[in-house]
Length: 342
Ligand code: AOF
Ligand code: ZN
Image (cartoon, rainbow, N blue to C red; front, side, top):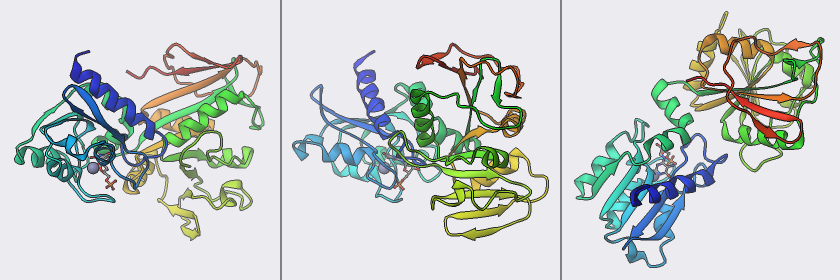
């Protein structure tokens, strides 16, 4: 790596410290370099809070250190007033000499205008350092803006012989504590978590985050015929749940029913989620819902948590022919595989 890449790598590493807390915003890190040394650092820590550039400028031991400095930031500095004022203006006021950017911001409110502002003020701007790494880190945010739909991750747990539950649909415990923590980490990283109503009826899950620090995703239940029991935990705990039906619409505190019409498809559900501003959804089952997503081809990432348990019979995991990449051993009895969708 050259020096520019080393500092950008540091900005990317810092950005990851916001993981699980910033959605629907992107992960952003920022490093301020002067005389070949890092003099300031920051990252976007939580949704609604200060941006990375503000944190980095505020971290300077001497505020004058920004004058003539090089600023490495993993996303184009913003040019708009959202929950916070424009970062491009701050960098201009701070009299930095140069701004080095990893990725452009596809948010139509920014999209090149941040760079333009900096250049107009006479600041040297370059872009594209470690671009691929940045694109991967913010894949949810970029997919949302470029494909105009949420990023979709599928995740299921299966026995070694390929069953996801008992024959009668009753759940089986496949997870060990380390796998459970990983699932909760995944939940913090997505803005929504989606299941079919059968999963609610059979498992009565909470679908929230308890075993990892970070935000709870919005729970989305596909329930065309309005079968969800009122006693379900997702309708009792006061956290947000959206229920997607064919015809029934209502609101009851944090719980909302949305009627998205007859014979809705995965496309319609994603369009609905896009209009609601959801940048990512983790689909956790069950079999029918996973199959429907796989058949739609609107899937960006797939994880299978395989247990060493042999069930012999049960409800089979999705039957698509997927190529699984090498697994990650998690605890003694679980291996996580990621599908190769490239
Ligand atoms: C930056 N630095 O650290 C982040 C940026 O509502 P706001 O004010 O938080 O603005 C959110 C938008 O700002 C977000 O959609 C994205 O375009 C950009 N995020 N920009 O300069 C940061 N997190
Ligand atoms: Zn900003």
